[in-house]
Length: 491
Ligand code: NAI
Ligand code: MG
Image (cartoon, rainbow, N blue to C red; front, side, top):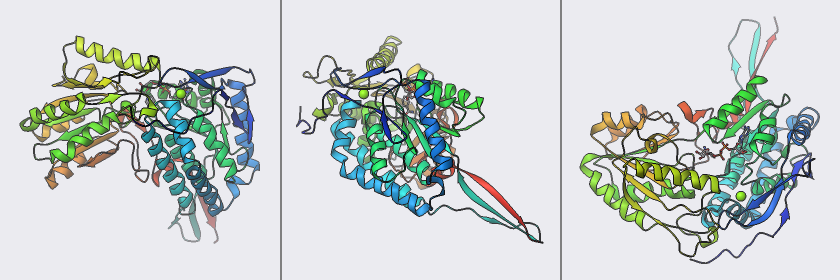
């Protein structure tokens, strides 16, 4: 099964929270076992923090914001700290890739790709810190009016398990560049790289208390963090249901939120498309990270004249896909945990039972450890647009194909779910590219390409149930700050 990774993660490490620049266990002493999704075996543990731990972390971030040097530091100095973090991530890249890969089960090369993207976030936001500024506004005679971009204060980041290091980087990069302080609650299934990155941030010169990490379950640590009265802004990536709970909790204190809540993203393939270019991208957009990608291209809409050909070629590719342990670096790894594997397997079984036609299935490698959470890829064809598999996020290696006739139907189908995160248009017709890109309701539209999670420079976020607010790119700096208007009367 390929060459195993040479780097292994030390066994039995008891990872700690990072509060006020110091490692800290949960006050209760409770711990959560960390298992590798590849074999289900425990290899480390993290604190099972509760409300009291969150309170300490938030108070540390609050003090660091109001009393510490961070928010008053010249922007260029803050940017240099973030840039040093970029260099430290590069220096520790192999260790971080191995840790991420073992913790989440993602193939080794995806762990490495995640390190590359993480580096780019800190590089981009380190450089951007001193390039964002306010305006002067023409106002009444005898007055000068101007705006300042000010940090919110304490930002709470609740991070999911699919791309923990990358999603942390897009949150922390933008939040730190703007002068906020942070309390991060990583997912209970994938907290290890968050702890390491926060330690590296200290080494990079980010002052104590600016970047705190509290691990634990969502219902305990996550709920306490989103409802904490000293938190000024909450940013979350994960499921719509949890997003609603977090918004309700933040609403108690009337705090702002950014919500990135996944999708059911369509790729629209017109008959004139360059199919040779499209086919590998269509496969990768759903197989990358085992389909556990908010922006996974989970629906492929194909114009009727080429539907049979695309279906047959995708089927040929799907039947060759193999899932296996992270260190074997196959097409895909295991899913994150037993619950997610059972959920995906249940949705596949229900679709089969409902009569949705299976065009192809991949396989799980014969040598994959029995205790791992594997799911073979599945390609469904001629799916009813109202079917569960057409409407709900599966978050697994499951692709649904739909035939369509003409541009109108393509747009209608593309917009026929409650989500609106990413879409793509495959066509050589320039006018059509523009028309369809405008009419599809999605936060990002790719033409003759697809970026499942890529492009740290590109603003990213949802319409409809996919959420609100924008991350990535320069625009995230606006989400991570507020406008203050200052008016001088000098009559
Ligand atoms: P989740 O949305 O519940 O978990 C994400 C994060 O939220 C974790 O850090 C978790 O500890 C935290 N959390 C959970 N409940 C919370 C609460 N009440 N208050 C504050 N924080 C809380 O996702 P889950 O249950 O692990 O996965 C279920 C589904 O969510 C997946 O099948 C997938 O469809 C979707 N999902 C989407 C992601 C995306 O990138 N858009 C990422 C992860 C999951
Ligand atoms: Mg894990």
